[in-house]
Length: 321
Image (cartoon, helix red, strand yellow):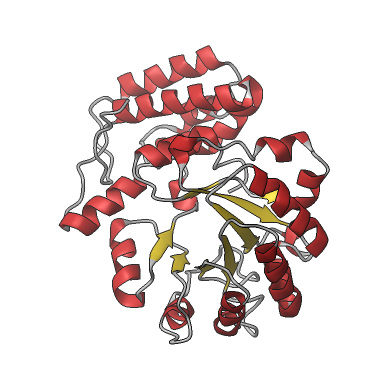
């Protein structure tokens, strides 16, 4: 979730009911070199808690030292990213790349657990490829060296984000009698119905939502309401989405400055208004403008032009705006 889960987005997710959040993942080497962009990602706020700082790297010593630095920021959890499939990361043996060397993966985890007094969790995948779906064994080994929870994405590294996530092995890990730590499922949770299925069919202790939050931080409230009542929330109007986008823009600029804040908001803006008819020209303007006032004016036009349009999705109103 690089350039996504910064504080400007996390505040929205929290207000819409996210129970646990994580920082953007942080490069261990950058953190111990005191690189500005890496250190900035350590900024967490009390209203975000519980929150985890997520680290990635390919060298054990660097990950251990980065863990000590991250511990000083006092998060609720240190999370190890063994799941990122991006080529430049995985090919160096970081992220999901470490799944090709399970003994190193386990030893790195053991040393990180021993380097901090904060609970350590792990996020990983089913395996490196179709021929090495070894997550059931890996899960036991990671638990044995002291992690407190495990999140599993239902794809191999080779799949990247293609095809459908396979939750079968996630369920097998959860139902393994040797496993006593919480198992959190991840992958393709894009609707309340899929969230309900994950809990009922696979028995996971929790679900993690990633890409489905882009431009849709309300998904947490949507899912919770459905799980509690069996009913969907009423659609969010376009003017309400515009109010949310404006708030997000303001916070993004506060956190990362005008240029970067606007640039990193673009992926959300295209998703906030996904599905609107005859929107191509406006979408192009929203993702190319670099001026905050122009963006606000464009958003006002969206609210005006689509005031009566009802999106085909379920979402409540936003009384906190």
